[in-house]
Structure formats: structure tokens, C-alpha cells
Image (cartoon, rainbow, N blue to C red; front, side):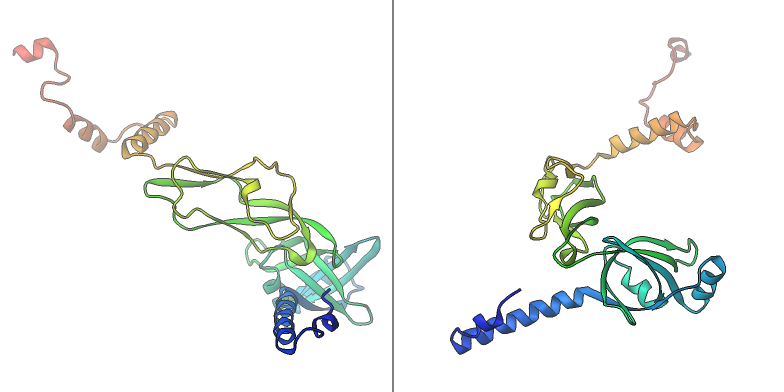
Length: 255
């Protein structure tokens, strides 16, 4: 926490500038924490859950830090928007209780509608580190005639609960074939550490793009393994590619 009183002991213009920066940083931090107003829930079972969902609400439970599980109901639309980020940090406001920071632990969705059916939330505290999986995103364009392979879609991080990034960006701008990016080269948030991955784990591999001949050969091999016979058009193309006299026997050429 920054001591504003000490900042104010500086010259007026300097302290005003510093305080303005602090306000912007704090506003940004608060904006990253999504507040959901919850209601206590004392009805359980499939029937109760269906009634909650029909009212455009979501049954949920909060647990962790030795606390007894707290069963709650969340607003449906707001919860759906909040959990577009799988690591969204939430403030749960429950009447008669202190607000509670929480992270989504498990989200059950309707496989057809995509609506949220139930949420498990794990309680966290400010200053506490948590282990999460963060999506990896490639940005930029590598050198011409190259292919960029992303070996991992997410990366495990141990990071402050209030400093979880939505994604880790990896720039491949201008990278040549043969370039590799390892886990230890990722730009992580301040204080974050790799979790579940070695420092030399391969993340991005830039290779030469395959030639058309290589692609055709791979396709032919795959078709042969699958037992797919060449079509008449393919046979005709192969015949057109032969030199005059190719495939003729010695006796045929003498007639």
C-alpha cells in the first residue's frame, strides 16, 4: 500500500502528479475485480436448481480457507459475462456477510445453450498467491515462408490472486525458421512464477513452411494408410506427367 501522506510531503506539483498516477493504478486494479451480488441459498437438489435457472440465476458455492461451504445464487447474465475470462477475480457481495474475493474453480455449462448451470468458487485473499492456467496468445507475423507452432495453449502460473493476467502474449514478429521460444522466455506479470512447467519447456517453434511437393507426398501417404484408392482424375494426371514411351514394354514400342 502506498503512503499518500508521505507523497504529499513532496513539492505540490510533484505530489499532485504522483497521486494522480496512484489513482489511475488503483482504478485499474478495482476495474479488474468484478463484483457480483449474491443471495443466500437454502434449497438444494435438482428441482431447486432448475427453479433457480428458470429465474435467470445460477446456483453456486464458495469454499476454501477452512470456511464452511456457503451456498449462494448469482445473477445469470452478469455471471455469464464475468466468466468469459476463466480466471476472473470476483468480489461476492452477500447480504449480512463481508464481501469475499473468489476465483472460479469449476464452471458447469449447458453443452447446447452455453448457459452456466453451476459454479464452484474458491475463496482467496489479497496478497495470496494462487496457481492458475493462463491462455497463451501468439501475436505478430513471423518471416515469410515459415510456420509458427504453438506447443502449449495455456501455461501454469503461480501468481498473486489480484494480478492474474487474462492471457500471456508471445510476439513472433519477424522470427526466422529455427527460432524457438521457451517457457523461461515468456514475459510474466511481476512476481509470477512458472507452475507445472520446466524453464526449458518448448512453447513456440518456428519452422520452414512445407513445399507443395511435400504436402502432396504427405497426402498420398495418408490416403494410402487409410486405404483410399487414387481417383480416375489422379490417375489421368499421373499419366499426363509421364514422358512419351514411359510404361511401354520393349515389344510394344516395336509394333
